Image (cartoon, rainbow, N blue to C red):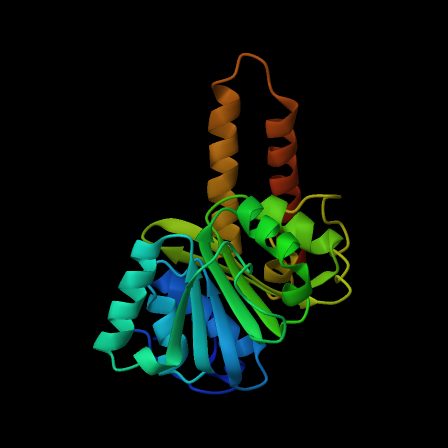
Length: 254
């Protein structure tokens, strides 16, 4: 299954990717990682693996010879191990109880996926495991919230965002971010200064879901402002920045 807006030609190997047991959000993360790697790696990290579905898909598609899946929940690791055993892949999955990269060694993995948690927590995981994180070929992140905090961390801590995608799954918009160590790309001309809620790379590549996501977000801001007796400055800035980006897209598409 290929995510809407992701062409087969962007996937350097294994297209179409297997992962029928995953939702669109995780399938998109899998495809983003495939696009960010030059080829299969020896080992990949699945941080906060939960049920292990993404770990299994990495193995099913041979994106990694081995996956080291970690979680702070022993119950989640048991689910992941049971799923791997069911699919005959338990010999290629290693499960560890770990807070972020704490149970990993330098050089042990070449890429990582960190999905389904808050952006601030993902930033904290990168900070605590910075030596490992900066050594990886590709890190794919899917924050459930706190996208702005995560992007700001990446921009200010020597990461280059290589891809930014929007996925609509179950009526909710998700933003996925791929990054690696490097000099950050400059924000597009006219982009609101210091505004990281939405991805500049999604803007650059004309992500087809960026505009509908922005319009939904703008509607939320307008409803929040309408319910306030005094207009909070933070909400006003969110509204103004969202309108600025929508205006940039409209101008670019003329």
